[in-house]
Length: 66
Image: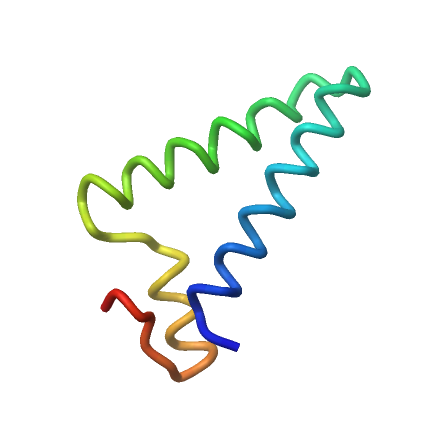
């Protein structure tokens, strides 16, 4: 599995978890959603994403973009 696919799956899991927590009244659930959104924005603007770096080292594969 490529780092890009792993990253997208992780983002989906974190977003769904945050949404479910927020819908069930857990205050910090919305912070998970904000974190993923802001990190995606940061990665889009700067071209650097910490999870890309970590996943490249774990899998030994490059992302399709990099």
